[in-house]
Image (tube, rainbow, N blue to C red):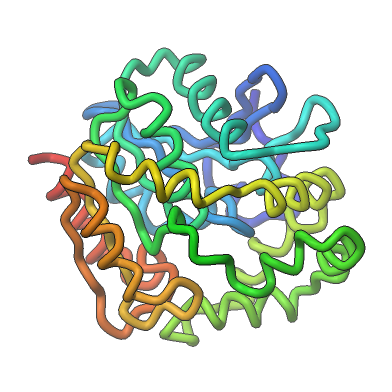
Length: 282
């Protein structure tokens, strides 16, 4: 099933689809016909648009699949939920690759997406080839204040309903070291799916049930070859956290990008694409 194009300029440029899972109609994009499968998992507040500068380059070497995780982008819930935990995110990823007939894949996760990918690798290690983490969650260090506020019973829903393009621009400005990269088109694309009522409801559940202590405890058990990429000037997750991943994951290597914020794959796509391709093709 094709995705409705709506008012998104980006959606009009790609051939995205929907895939029926047990509880969600997942919006996704597939690119590249050769090479091993690579699953791209965006962070909180974003959708597969986040990988717009990565998909063309990576699909020249891999069979790339980027999906909108539940609560984000254009993925649709098939029923109301009172809870959405790390277990649920892993189940979505498992059903996604199962329905597409993928036995084993490499996974790239950014920010919260990195935490979701780590939890999946711990639960289903036999389904993972390699891991790429970009400015990743997964350590029990507490979330940034705006995510913590979403957990408040009354304040959280109110804050989400009050999200404006201006608020999105401010958040993106904090994500990027190079502020000139935050364009009106980017703000528009990120803001559009944040208006959907079903996304707002699910984002509250997600914020309340992300137990990063579980992923932190599991890090020593994750033995897949892993590449951890970080922006030196990340204002959401400080670059000092990179040392914790290096210390706890026995098969991880790291790269730090200078003059780079929280979204390294968007801020320096050519460098990040090269790092990922070199790592995965070894």
